[in-house]
Length: 357
Image 1: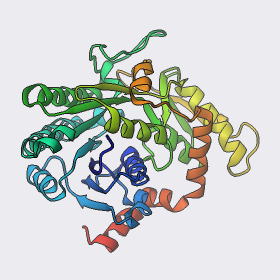
Image 2: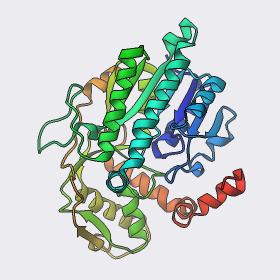
Image 3: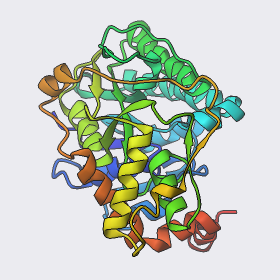
Image 4: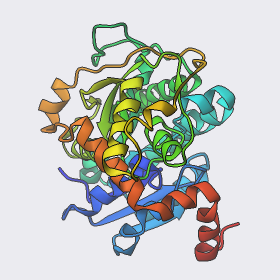
């Protein structure tokens, strides 16, 4: 059954904003609450059009604040929570692990505590229909060799503070399900890319570096392999999991399109030559610079998504080359959004429109 009143944590983020846009396209959606603390990667400019929809509401608040979460649940009365609020960048987790523990672990625990109490107060029919969907990552399962895939019963083997904090969050979700009966669903997504992604991640970083004429830094030899999924495909999978997923279910939402990091950057270089500002052939590829690998860099991720595709009546539609082209085109056509991130004008825009300091 399609949810009608959905609370989205982290809705101003990259995936969260696409999820909200997807929800508002559904006729069954009566109301969406974007519950977001607006940390560095949250950007309300990503939801300018959606903010015009009377079904959309924004609340600046943190999942680490129990009172704020309780108040939102009481006032909004959701029948579904999509939990996307998280710190997600591996490099940042190596330098600032405490932030990842506070948001991903403590924040998830506080959200679960408040949600469980809210769910227990619901009438039986509404309680039966309620869902708590937690968006996780393939990185919780660790690293693969040249062959094999992760499965729903694969053991957890995180290797970074980021993946360890997401693993802990997953375990908290399952513990609330087992101890309190809270109807929970977990999705594990693969590497996501697309428009409006904060430029700390590989693809938007390479796009902006290239357009600025700067070097394109690639870790190690660039042979690490990731499974890539376009953000709209990921948002569609999350929606299908909210509609068709069963409590206790684990769903793998990968793109089934494995690429080495070096091949991603090389493909991006060719795409920029084709649709970007005119440059001589090979101009961007010459900017690739191999740099010292990061500590504990996982070699390969790959998930077997066949069961998820069958259970959720879902499959990704974007081939990697097509999705990459759409992504590059978006960054080329939205210089104001890019500038807002690079110069801090976004923060000024928030102050002028909302009075936040």
